[in-house]
Image (tube, rainbow, N blue to C red; front, top):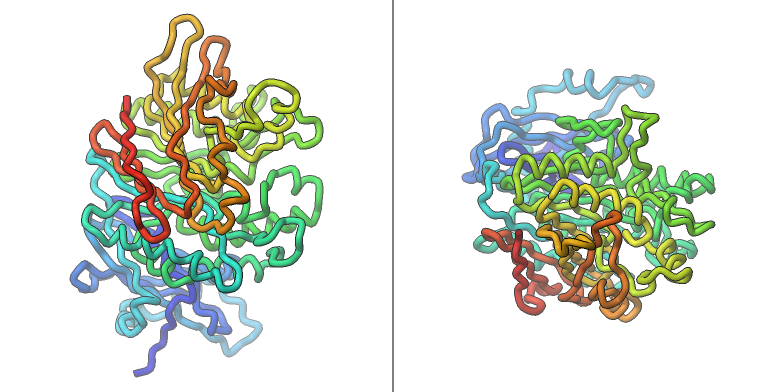
Amino acid sequence: MNNMLRSPSVGPIVGHTTSTSTRIWMRGSEEAPGRTVGVAALYDAKGNYVAKSACYLRLHREYDRTGVVDFTKLKPNTTYSVRIGSLTLDSTDDMANVEDEELLKKLPKAEALCGDLELLIPEESVATFTTYQDAGEKGLSFIFGSCRYPGLLWAAKKADRIFGSIHEKFQSKGAPQFLLMVGDQIYADKIHRQIPLERADTPSEFHERYVTALSSPNMRALLRSVPTYMILDDHEIEDNWVKGRMDRDADKRLLFQTAISAYMSYQWLHCPRNYGPRGEVQDADGDKLFYSFECNGYPFFVMDSRTQRVRDDKDYVLEDNHLLGYPAKPSAPNYQGQIDILCAWLLSQQKKIGDRPKFIVSPSIFVPNGVETAGTDERSRRKKCEDDSWAAFPETRRQLLQTIVSGNIQNVVFLSGDVHCSNLAKITFTHKTTGQLPLRAFCITSSAFYWPWAFADGDPLSFVHDSKLEGDDFDVNDDVIMSYKAYGFEQDDNFTRIDIVGKEIVVQNYDRNGKALGSKTKVTLA
């Protein structure tokens, strides 16, 4: 039987999901020479078509023929599947310029293509997901990690292995709700940013990186069956990327534009996209890369800690460094920086949900700092300014911590990646005259999914373990000091499962084969 539809060339990917909605992403077939549109339909857990759910979706040419479809008015805590494919459209007039909206109006009703959808190979065209529970403190479980080096030549299968183990965790009893990938989903610069070999710098090369990464067998099976949230770090653009490179070099500006276009096509499209041009909250289709979401009543703010970062690499003036772009200023009251939006979000969440954990996703590690940046001498200062983590951005860190202290914001949990060494840190605050404050915060780092050279970086001894003993406390203001203790370092390829049970966060790392690394760590919340 002939089929009018083709399976996605990449995907489908289950993206942003709530208790009543989901977003499904796909990339159209590579075999189609003309314009393509997507076709999707929703089915219940028994495989029955959900009436009137079939629809078309735009596959944006500017986004490499990728697109998303949103299904709404779903039932909470319910399993569904989506069948999705693409339809090739030809025109007898090569000069015709028909807009997508006009074209979609001319097509037959999407229900007419449900039979064709059901003929596509399920492993290439069916996404399965479970909506979240209604909001409320009912516990939470999720898996997160970062840094998937693609592997060279024969090592490509090794780079994909861990995602099979993650997939198994989502198929078992008591499965987590979602997956969070916190940076370096691709490596545009496989060798080194200064070495042209294996370095992406054209649209087709960036697209190839994503197609290869997202189409590996285990990764593809995982992403089409688990709600997944992503955010970029440096290797989606270039190692240790800062905004100043784009300002100083026209070639770097072109590189940035090319890299971000690919990132938006393959990662950003299926994220919530809920902040507008001035940081205002929108229901959908905002233009900022940072976003927020919640699951089971637990809130998450996912930072863009890469594209806006300002760092003084010339004069080593730490006070001029800003991780999240410039903060707001009195002379421009209608504009907010990302740090201001994050601080306002924290204050609103504390008011809304009290001491329930509030998760901040920061691809760059919040703590622990590297041992070379500890101290206050000139050498440490220069090392801080060269650092790729929060140590290089004291003003951004200070504004955030001052908000936590002044707003009495309990149980802030930073989720980080990047450093190829998983660990956990407990953050405390001490008043210089009255003693330790009752505030608690934490940083959980999970990295790397796959990194073949553990001997080259990520050494646990290269990090500060006790900030008081190693001279790495941080002045929040004139009266309060932040301290931390880090532990549970793990260099093996790994991913991390987080479970919130009552007043505890349970943290467990797993290796590439899904075997537990060490024992579970229980963190007591305030």
